[in-house]
Amino acid sequence: MKNELEQVLNDFISLAKTYYDRKGNEYLLEQLEVALDKLEHNVQDDIDEARATYQNVNTICLVNHLHLDKDEEALLEKIKEISMSKGWIGGLNSWNTTNTWPGK
Image 1: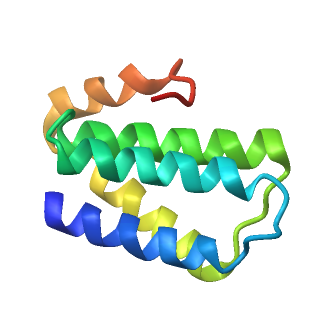
Image 2: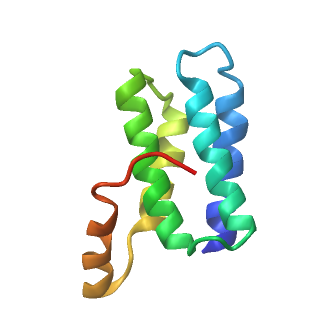
């Protein structure tokens, strides 16, 4: 699952870089790059990182009135799918990111 998330993040970063002049895009890129760095250095579990990244990207889009294109939305949806833990304990863990703010 970690490799899949890394690939999705790399694809998302590449795509977001094509919108260099989009307002608020620098925050989106920073968040995606921080998430990829955390995965590569085993700072956080892949499911937890996917969950935090999904929420943080949505927060960045909301706050900055940033509109993702269809391909970016599809990649964000893949991040959401990865973030969904399996089982009832995983469902409880999904609540952990409710009050998470973007950060490093």
